[in-house]
Image (cartoon, rainbow over all chains, first blue to last red; front, side, top):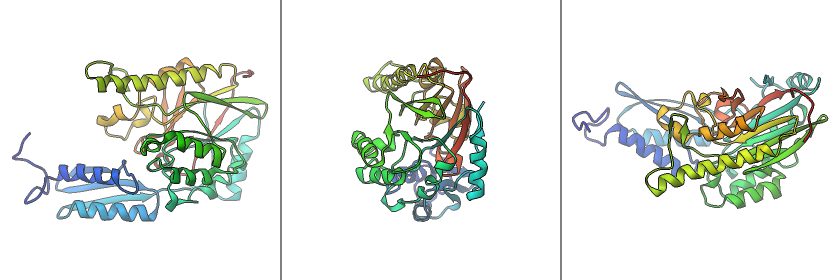
Length: 93
Length: 264
């Protein structure tokens, strides 16, 4: 392991990639059992993507992300699941 | 895009001509008491657009009985038969049998695991064979029964569930249409968008082998939230990933046409 390059946000804190792993474990064990959060590092920023099942779940995820990545530049794209009826079927050949 | 009554009629009109089975399918709805009723309005319109509803696992968040009751209430009394497999979330609390019992008793859901069900649709027999399935990876990039006991157990478990699917599909040999319903994916195609590193935890080629040997007309799975909808087995069977974040609706709709007359 290259300890000289611990990743973005490492100054004075746990390296960002460990914080990402800790966030994923925390969310998996949390009330929404969220296992599908996508976390990517782009330069000095963190990108977080997910689809939340409800507004409350989305709010919970945003709070957890902000808390875990305190001090980092974070971009989030957490959409709400659409539960509408599709307007056409696919004819499977 | 979603629609109202006009959209329902448009969908229904496409499904009534000839020998067509209209399959609604969704997975990974992750319901719990605080989300009760979220899918109910859409599910109550199923009678106009589909002949049956398939649930591809991860119906709950933690696999608790309370969450199973929420799922059962969501689908109880619908106009179409409901057939389900469980997912890994539905096993998390350690009581998958109780979860399945609640779905059966309170939701009238047929829950499959290494088993099959046959639904009459417009004079046809539509067979559904199901298993949760498990991981292990895909041909050339998969685990094997070697080394530590834990690794052997991992692969054996995946193989045993795939064997259950194979047996269940064999029961449907005479059906007009055969559908394989799993939670884990049988192919890597529908995982596109997921990190490559986690593919072995998302599915197994053993499921695809069973799908091909059982001459399924369609394979439906969930589990891969960041994947893509369309795939194909090596044997040419269409595969659809119906994880809710992928289909982005309350359910996906597929029309299937039998190649020739048969019967179960």
